[in-house]
Length: 111
Image 1 (cartoon, rainbow, N blue to C red):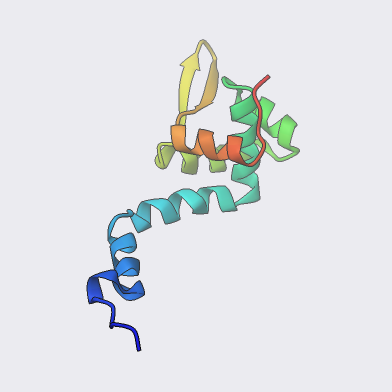
Image 2: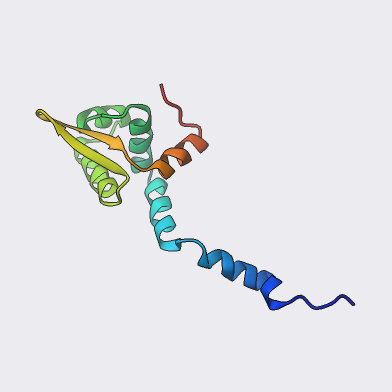
């Protein structure tokens, strides 16, 4: 029979090490943001067209302005989107480089 593996090299220890090296709660929140179709559509729109208003996002996604505003509130709270007032309008931008890269990974493109 082969020699027994040390605990440090066992699948259990490697799994524990993997879990310790990742901020599980932060990644769960980030993936949770992407799991909602409304928020994902908004993020895709902002990725392709930075500086969109709530009205533009509502028209692009076919959702109400209220639904878009609520989704943006969550995305701002999680620091994924920034909103800036420009005159009477508020423009929104994707502001999370990791989500930006994830969107590229799923096929999102820029103009």
